[in-house]
Image (cartoon, rainbow, N blue to C red):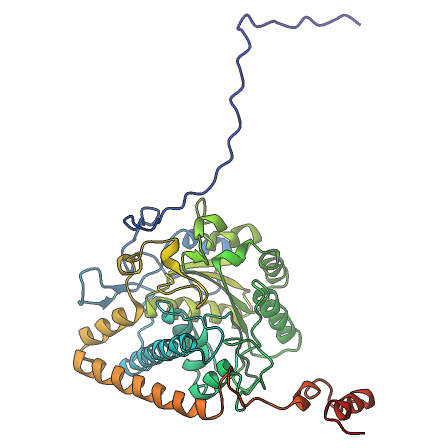
Length: 428
């Protein structure tokens, strides 16, 4: 075989450029001005609302959009515009406003309770109330909810007693979970609210699995699950999307992008190069990206996804673009990693104020009525807290007796547990 001549380059070999590892920048630094340059605010009403039965690919442009309904960039003149306007009755809007305000009042009271040593831990949802309240109202009361620790508004919007929420936080003698859960990890079968897990990411595969079972049994209920943007880096998130896509599970999958996963910015979780809603594209799922501080937009997006799921057209991934105005938890000091005034300059504003201004624009609300309702709810929460403390607090008790360690595991307690219970109580 003849050798094939190889042309030789006359150029001198160059030194290869060293590889560089990209570290997402920490944009917001304490002591500096807040930096939201990564965010572009599109106009309200700027995107079409597709039919619920469109192929998922037709929703993919909405992964990089931002569905907005409230045109409130001019201040208090807050109008509902565009095809995504859900055209809610004023009474429904007032109901949503009240639930958001009640959630905020409850959060504030429990935050102070933790600071006073009456419980060990608490997490507020300040600035994110529209996500949980609007979604609870858009879903049916018996749809199954798989929430994380910042969606207490789901239960409050469904009418769950504030007293029971407080007693769970205090782990006292009136705790409906009998002291078996950490504070804020609520659970209620009666309100279709699945037991919270402190592990992040588990909520979505659980929601998908429940939805698959509901469809397999020929039921009519759908499921909804929530995680934060940081948990999209967990394998559970991708497992959930795979099963949701393959089996067209009747489920609404929610990513609450509140910009911060404890002290790391949303870009560390992958938000620098693509939106979190865009994660659905590779799985062939429908996806929406919505202004999470716009009550009407959240309601409309959830309503669309729920109708699509109920009509057997499959799951939808919704990214709620919002902001965590408070600390990650009572164990966190956000001033150590972001500017102290960052929440005040958030481009999408405050969900409570925005809905208030919209109702005032409609002539269905006023500053005086708002102030009166805020005072009423604050007093109601304060009175309920006083009652909750009569049943005990985490530090001072009283608590459930030792016998509850052996209850609610088996339908009928087996002999060995009965024996252990007698020994624990000092009986023969």
